[in-house]
Length: 340
Ligand SMILES: *Cc1c(COP(=O)(O)O)cnc(C)c1O
Image (cartoon, rainbow, N blue to C red; front, side, top):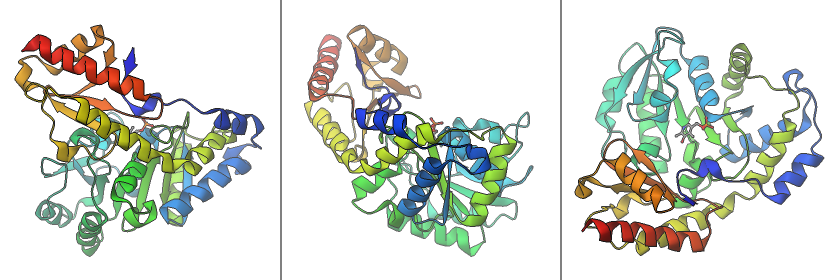
């Protein structure tokens, strides 16, 4: 079975496992884990922020980022397709955290329209603007440094801080060929995942000003996110960051797969959306639902995910071999041949 569902299925390397075995640890809830401290310092440095905080997941890091900057009943400006709105729904649910949402109007590549940002941040009740990079639901597309800068400038004019969900910010920085720190510079806080393309088994980082991170530390504790000898997993995160430049191989493999899929009448791909390690496929021409396509591909030995009703998503990562890339293309092409 070839698994192109997500880069969350990446496996820790031998080097990571050795680092985990040998990690110096302590009770991190007392600030006594040197390996966690090292990972946090490295993350702050790579994102150009003052401080960083280690989380068990990106979901929790995003929740804490919002709760730390927005009070109950106040409003967050967010894209309706964003992970923060869709998956971190507890932020916006009355049953849980009770923050309100107003929606950003974005184009088909997920780029927020400046006019929409302008009108949102002009509202008194909007206390935080959330951006995502890469844009998962839009096929892993990127916001450029220039676009982020322009959006943040508008928010700043109205004293609205910006949180960037950069789960795959290393993919975006790789595509744009700039340091992560330059890309996230105008954002007040940024989250990124160690556990996706970077390949660590567990964990995400929240980076920002000393004040935001101090508040986030309190909030993390309040919702049960403190960990103890978490240096064991942080050790793998450090290796993941040191090896981050290998992400470009995932993007090369993604282009390779894109060019091997030769059935684009039925499986439509806008090549402009294939920027990072995702391929988003419009399946409407097959007259099947995305779920049916997914199930048929599964019977042929290829696991994919759906995006809504009309799209499939293929995700490349370090544990997909070039043989598997070739085989995945063959399966997709034979699927199309059967349909036509
Ligand atoms: C995966 C992801 C998250 C959450 O990370 P987890 O570690 O899976 O909880 C947040 N935002 C985006 C855009 C993601 O892709």
